[in-house]
Length: 258
Length: 367
Image (tube, rainbow over all chains, first blue to last red; front, side, top):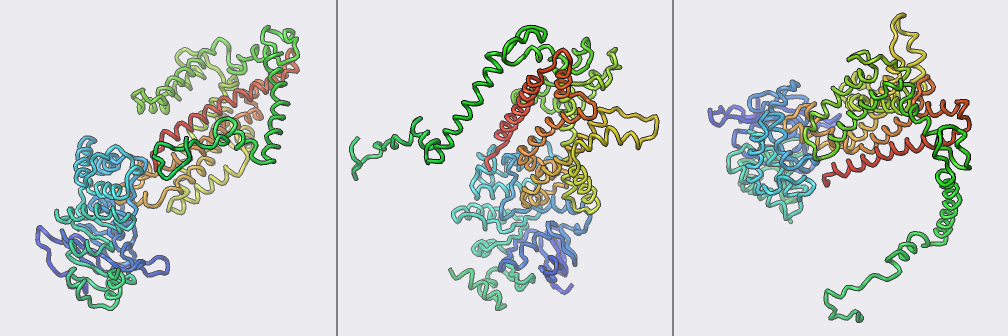
């Protein structure tokens, strides 16, 4: 419990959404996460950046158990992640995730992609699930694509569908794993716009991205990771203007130089 | 048309060169493009010329179609009278003639239900599927074997012909598919014991020839069960065929499962779907669609392999044709029988193949 942030007592409304204490993970012999301590408040927006292979994707994938951590403690929305499959499914219902490669289901229409989890996991009646789905499709500005298959959409549209699909489960937390890295430049904005909207509505968000403009605009806190460790974390202004660590400075100079 | 000039407007597209379009263009490109292509074309035409006319003469022009005995076959060509006279046995085997309506009736129910299932505009597809998978087998069992509803008992040893072929092939295929899916999932499971059992099962059944399986079922199996307990020979053969087919299908389906990207699993898991929902709703529909050609391939192979049941004394379609050919009154017409058998098998296999191609196109969603 070395991290000072863990001691901030939550108020009733806000409170802590995610708590990671001394988390370690190995891939075989490779130590990919080293003593991660992170506490995320409700409604907080966090951007994680760092060079590739630094463990940032692995970190957020541990939060919904797509990766298993081997030491330490992760508590999400007051549920501790253990090997209990029920609890894992419970957490996954509360935590939405958006992937670099969208991971839409290509054999289902856009609408069916959106209604599937609410109907089969939340047991929502079909008509209601479709209403919810159309509401979120409208919010990501592509209601007219509902009957199409994902393969018929552009990358930016697919990613917006993926965001809408997560939102249909009414999650308390959204994880974004490099959501714009696989997109053509002209499509990045349409996805970032949706994410900015979401942030302004007060969603708890953890975003792994290299979009520093987005970080600057939306993030409450920017975290820099390298070699499986959290090197530095600060509010965007401090982070970009006066980074403390040499590694952060080097990284920022590399990605901001062009 | 004038020469192309810099002032040419968009409407003056030139036609392609005459040597690349039309029948002549097609032939030049595809049949006579090089000297060896020309040689192959000539050779191909020669083979067709040598084979087809004599066959047509034999099978149609000089064939004998009318009559009821072998004496009617006076011409040089095929004696289709043989097929005509024996067609009842070829289809129903030794099933009593006055009971054949039961098979016809069962076939009509099956064909109608399958038709409503595959023709898109009929509703109630779910209920039809449930009926076909749960209701129909029970109805068919009592209809064909009898001893219920006032129907006379017909022993399975009297079952035969095309009827028996279809019983074995259809039951083998339909029951093997779910077993194959379970085995394929088991082989990819994280649980070492489950995986080991599935691997052992698949490798064991895939490693022995179907003939061995059938011999084991018919000859060896009765030696191991307590005296007094007898299990119908057809049933034993069916179970053997089914498990054999399941092992093959398992490997086909595993191929499909391996082609599904990891992102699909993660996408499903991140939404909170548990293992069974993820498999049934997300992974299997995609995997099975990918391996339709492989599944149909094994079904067609099985349909033809059912002819092997002859060696354990079950008279399937081919078996009946062979035994008719050894009838003293009809000696010497084996060729007609085999040609007919080949034609019927080809018709069945080709239909299955066409339907599967239609299914692939229908299920394609443009990714």
